[in-house]
Length: 210
Image 1 (cartoon, helix red, strand yellow):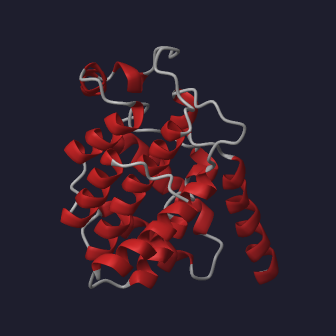
Image 2: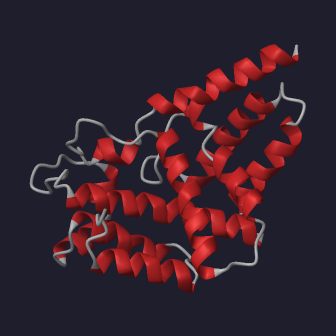
Image 3: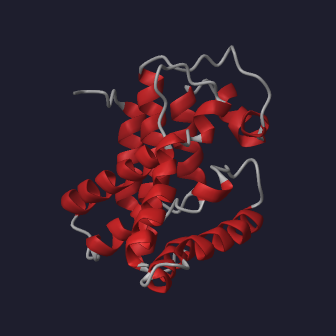
């Protein structure tokens, strides 16, 4: 029944409004209200629009927005797992299974699933662009929390992220929490020149200007 399919899909995705991003919990972000996965999805889409506007990418921005809208739907089933908690191939396996099940009842489910898989492969121009938005948005939100004074590095318990050797090295260099993550992703994500420029600008400036 089409009406029921619409409601089922909406209610399932609506759960992401209440799934708090794991990274913020792991680093004990102290704030009355912490970002949910649904808010992260919104942030990636707004970042995509701004990047397309200012740097004039030759891409299908509607396709990008569509990809970003669905890129976290698997987390309605598996939760928000970070790269420090689970191996990439293992996460992909369980996430792809979850997405296939979620979309199975929709008439356009197969088409939507293809977009999800395209995003995950990072091979097309749109998927590369969307992936960079996904990663940079997280770092920008991190910077905003840092500027608010939401994280005390002296009051941290042990975790996979904090015990990572490269994370520890960046912190020993005296980088702030957010600048550490911005630099970490600059070293690990294949950002193009424009995304690198924005990330570096965020490191050097107070971005909480409004």
